[in-house]
Image 1 (cartoon, rainbow, N blue to C red):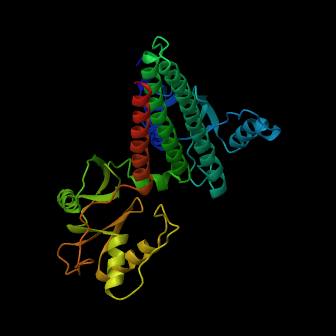
Image 2: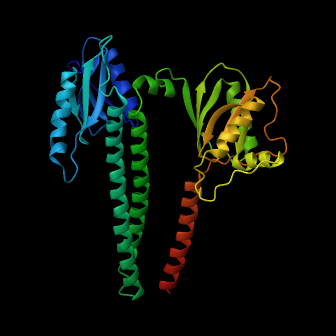
Image 3: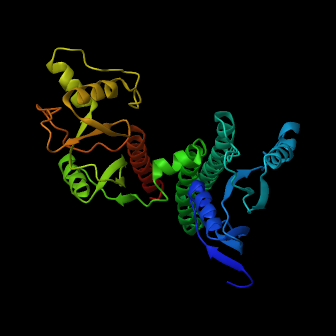
Length: 366
């Protein structure tokens, strides 16, 4: 640190984590004064102060209206009336606003549902639009690939061989980036729809009482043993996905776990002579009828809801010491069922398209 200036390099995906970190730095006596490339932070040493930060963006669309042109000026003027000052903005036009915390005062720039919605939509639209640009790039690249394929079909010196691999590589990169930008947009939307305190409570970020484990598990019995082992160390599941398991630290006791699905729910209904839950129009499994039935059944038998997974399955738990009744005594869920319908269709369509393209390419290359 030189002349009361300190620089730190740190990369954040979550803006809420970044905001909380900046506030923690202020409590330690460092105020943000400059940022470069979204990851190089410059701080000025100050007296330890409770500062609060907000992050917003004011970039204009391609064809702005008069209201959109004036929106930046109006928004900043409103923020300044509430005591906020612009600390800086980065190369992506994210503006960092800062003010001292005031007890009993409004310490959020977006302090109602409507303003949070506008703020969250702004970030989601920003990143999904970049995702769309990536998809447009994919269309362009694949058009070039088709043109090269036609050239090679007529054997004009095989001029497109090296470029073909370049286009394929760029296409894969664009697909990955398009998915990533859409994921980031959804992440920011969810974060900005919450207050900072609600976010901290959900993620337990400052207390370090949460962790993520990356693990690929196929069988439900393997998952049950894994969760029970983590529970023995005080870690209990909060959220599950295909390869990521989020845990929170707690001393709430030892649990046994089960998973339920639409198939097993219908099997229970059929066993008691009730109609099965079917909706031929619900191709993606987004309807919640079976989940409502599953939760009702589980609570009746003494099981506690933990989380729903990709609209495909539900995880329940019950204390090991309790005499809880089995939810599915006539059949258990063999496989975990973490793969959503949407992701399954992407895999199937991608594999089918790959086979078709490969076959056509082989025929044209003869």
